[in-house]
Length: 569
Ligand code: ATP
Image 1 (cartoon, rainbow, N blue to C red):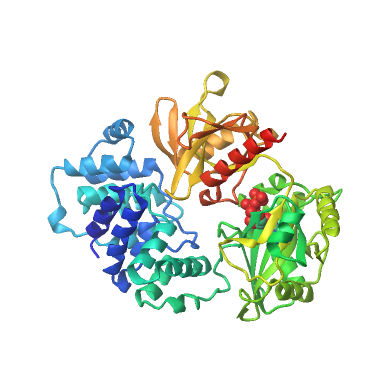
Image 2: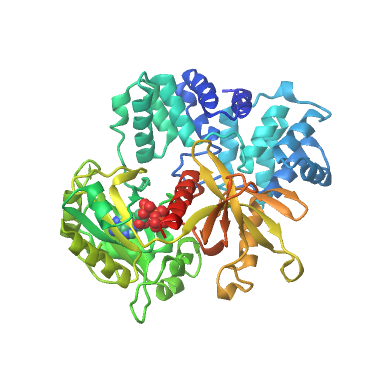
């Protein structure tokens, strides 16, 4: 397929902010999309592989600038200058391609296959000469690109497409294009995407118009699956009302989600963001090999840190560095040990258990996992219909330094990727949100050179947009030894800068942080219409993706609750 066709689609989609119009445009495109061109769906999402694949394009603005300069025969300084004034590197590439002296458009036709081919070579490059090789792969594409193609190529390269297409838009468009019952179609498409995390393979089925085949999408060992998420309940009574009696009540451990795949002796560990973290946790693979009796299995668990001397559980924050660290693995393993608390099983000896009742799944865990405290255990659980017993269990969980409890319907299925009403979390009322950093401001004086104030945003799910909700500058440290420092965060943010004006920067929404606050206020200053009062940074959340951050709806709900609480004291 010609890349131009895709570029024109990007243009059409971004010409409207209305979600329904975007869906209509995309739906028309999908109707005419040949199954053999299905991989352009990755490009539509700004990717080159399915969602679960870790190979990302990962090109910095600086490298893109070099390639633009080379491809258009423009001095690098001029590209930078243009970028500073226009603020969008894609637009800069478009403009410079337009004014390029010898236009080679006639001699080259850029295809989506060629674009994918070159972009896919980028993450594989390693070692000496990598940068030059990357630049030449990109330059090759840019030299045959027309201005509009250059615009979207560059935006794709730096991971900032700005067209407002998310998986949810693709889901709705597929349903609109191929199914009469759109609502049911969208639900089935989403379920298939949550299991496979591969929009192109789901498109294949959808294109044949077979809605019921979507239900047959299989989960596979080695391919990450989205975790099932919980809704909130205020207290144990509300929990029982929602999930029924009796139900299972478990500790809500304060660690991070780990979905464990076992195939014979091969173990693969995935986070909730579908990242493969097997290398970071060698001991976990050992525990699974030793203590899980299964030829093949997929287990859902929470990895919790504990103090190696006192054996006391520690909060998530204290072990978060283990998720990302690629070096000193053995040292970290010694210093920051984790215990695996298994609470679900999705697959066992060649068979998917997604449609089996929770009761059966939880029983199976107890049968096939030999518990070894501080290595691997079954999540602490009671099955009861008694509110008093449930309350006692909840208090005990809090005393044991855990976050609260989970209440689970015994008959429920496992629904990957859904926030379900049959699994509820109960924890003490506290005001805290996960938010994504979308901007920042360089500090002055002692803090010059560092970004020292960060714009934080929530997610408007309807519009698929991040909306600002405040600025946070407290809770960070000046020295790295004391916690998350300005310096450390600035380093993380620099490659994500998409626009720089004076001291202010706009940042690709990638870094998720936990923020506590005292109050939510209405505010015209920020695009969400709300502002957090006294926001304070508490932790980096490398285990969360930007799509996991607090939604505008949740913020509105908390704002309303807060008002109610004031009224009734
Ligand atoms: P929160 O920010 O309140 O921790 P969350 O965003 O982590 O919520 P939720 O789905 O809302 O995710 O809450 C469930 C999370 O709690 C799971 O993702 C999992 O990481 C963790 N968890 C701890 N113990 C359990 C358990 N026994 N059963 C299920 N999930 C558990």
